[in-house]
Amino acid sequence: MYNIAFLIIISVLLFAPLLSFILGLRWHLVAKAGKVDKFFWRYKLSSGKIPKEIKCGDDTITTLELDHLYVYGNSMKDYNILNGQYIFVEPYKTMESKQSIQTYPVLVFEITEQKIQSKYKLRKFVSYIKPNNVDWDVVYTNNKSRIKISQQDFVQECSKKENRLKNKESDYILSETFDEEKGRCSYSLHPIETLYAKVKYACNLVK
Image (cartoon, rainbow, N blue to C red):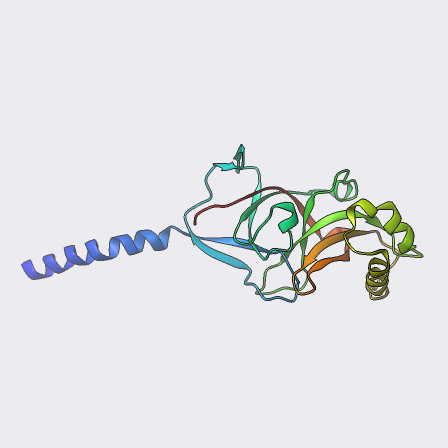
């Protein structure tokens, strides 16, 4: 009887830290900062909860009213969002809010038809676009200060992506991402209804 009690005590002492660690694990949704076809799991497993308040640069932010995602990739490095960071985002809750962006935030779009991969991607807002009869030279001129490739490359790239759209009557969002393979920025179109949130903060958290 003494030996059994002794073994139970030893087992508890040995496995209590492991059990505590396991119970402290949390699943965090992942956002792709890069090509959509690059594989990343939907969730990042890490220990501990996101604190209610965290230090982000010079700001102390309250996280309770913000959603958060774990970032894989460096396509938003020009906007101080890096691989391995957590981003804190403010969801767009109405179609009206999705259609009335006034500044140029980093956005989170939903990736459709994903089962096990990450269902979110990061892109930089450039402008709204109605693809039907769009003049890409005019779009380039109107947004020249925010486009980082030549006019010829921009028009060629966007024209190809416009031609692949199934519905050209709807409004779209034109966005920017840094293509790490090409070593330059790339531009693409997204249906407004796939817009999920805008990034408010990006932080390095030890998890």
